[in-house]
Image (spheres, helix red, strand yellow):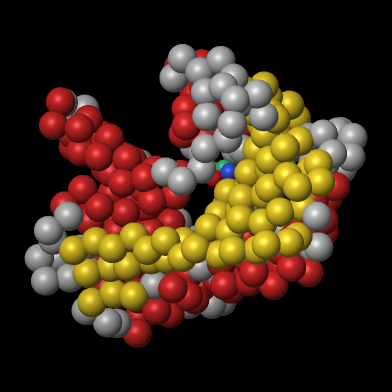
Length: 268
Ligand SMILES: C[S@@+](CC[C@H](N)C(=O)[O-])C[C@H]1O[C@@H](n2cnc3c(N)ncnc32)[C@H](O)[C@@H]1O
């Protein structure tokens, strides 16, 4: 995060950051609009990164955003208030023990949550239980196996595998994007449709090179350094070589692509 301050917050930098946020927002949210008066549950809202575009795209829907973490909910509430949105209610709740009756919602939205859960199937079944018949679920997840970059580098691949292994050891699945279709079908949803959404960055897209390659993906992998070394998955030298190689993909002749998976389905 400190590197953000290096660039400062002058007008150009603010525009660049907004452009970058808009690009991902467009990619992930542009086709999600809920009708006026519909009741929407955002499950695992975190600090509200998706709540703001979600609520902004459907200003006349009523969104209930839940999370386990009270501190995250407080930040999410502040984000929504700062955005001038008045259609979101926050509540501390567990997806696996929802405080809502059967059929309480018209739509459910879940983003970057299933990848952290030891039993994503149980979460999907619980969420289907609070959807009315014919209601929809939208799920967005990443998949670290979808990474494509140039120059290709085995140390970079190994550093990414450390993150995948650490997440698996914590009970999650950093490769869950490819499993959305079978998970939703097994949870009893109908009309399951998965749409891959690729973020592509090369030197012709400097906002994404900086914002996605450096500050999002590489920063996330770099953040696992201590845990990966501690777990015996890598050595400082090998890991640092992998991070340097990921940074090289942000060079003038580099490229980097990552695919998110957005699934929609209907409760029968
Ligand atoms: C990676 S964050 C994603 C937050 C947000 N959806 C986003 O895309 O920015 C995952 C969130 O899921 C929440 N979470 C994990 N397990 C949960 C559960 N069983 N019930 C409710 N929230 C949960 C965590 O507290 C965390 O805020």
